[in-house]
Length: 439
Ligand code: XLS
Ligand code: NI
Ligand code: NI
Image 1 (cartoon, rainbow, N blue to C red):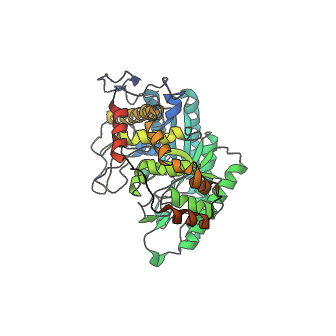
Image 2: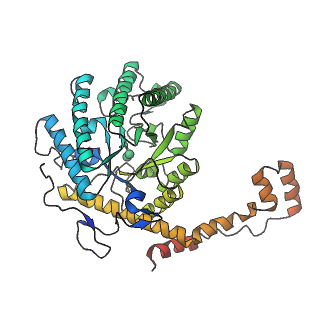
């Protein structure tokens, strides 16, 4: 098999003092943290689209990277992408990958020819997965790039487009099952609107639920056992995406009776686009029992769009890993690097630098999250802050014994409330820093 990154060796853990650009400084796959190996805790995944397909285009400029892997014929290009993907996963010690149907095989002139191309590449992927011992974290369908999806897929105003999307999703579920995917993701793509002047929002949302139901019923009927995820995003490409954030997705799922079927796949950059922190979205999902998987990346605080950068902000990864540990991990999900190199980082070795930086940042995050929990001061503070609910009137509120009249009686006797307690934010932030950087 041809090597595409022959000048780059297998990346290994060398420890925090290493100056080797192609070594992990913090990710030590077999080291145990919080009872499991780092490999098991972090379950890193490579996103096919950003790694093997994205060539650095933006709205002002052409490609800066070449991802044709030495071929010109479309099928040959996509076969080489597959070989390159497995070389990257081997060298970076990544166990999982994720794809959209259109990332792995070229589109033909008709749906059946496209499906034939897919089948050919899927059997190659299956063979490579067995040879290299790699797993599919999740599959999905790209129902947003083709011009037919200009007004959406499941929320299109045109029923033939809805049918086309359904057919594409059916096939994507079949290949995900064929490759034994742990999950299947629905990201809204163009499911949203630009202006309500031309939009029947109610019908669009009902239709989106209809499509999800059909897809899930079909998947179960063919024996797909994986988890279903919805990936929230507030905007981009449409001005308003229907899967705005975790809370909005939960309301949607509950309305249509789908809340027991889906978990969420939370992307850091989508959280910040919705003006939430990454940790906020993970927390909302965790306390509602729907934290399923993560698209690991980060945005740029100065830019208001989905830059999908490799995650390097250790505060964010630490607080994210705290939520994930508190969730008991991500049993059916993982950390998928929905991350791409900057347009200016166009050399093949930059792919390695991106993954090494991201994997080390999450490894650091895991180490710190474990220390936060073992240190216990932050959790104890929160516990103490709410201790008035453990006895007396607080316990009556929590148990449901207290009626509003009882509370009025209680409040009338109180005079004023004393000792509400300081929030101590700065003190807690200093504790966090001392856990992160202290010895
Ligand atoms: C785009 C999304 C997409 C999903 C999969 O913003 O993050 O890449 O992860 O369709
Ligand atoms: Ni994503
Ligand atoms: Ni994104």
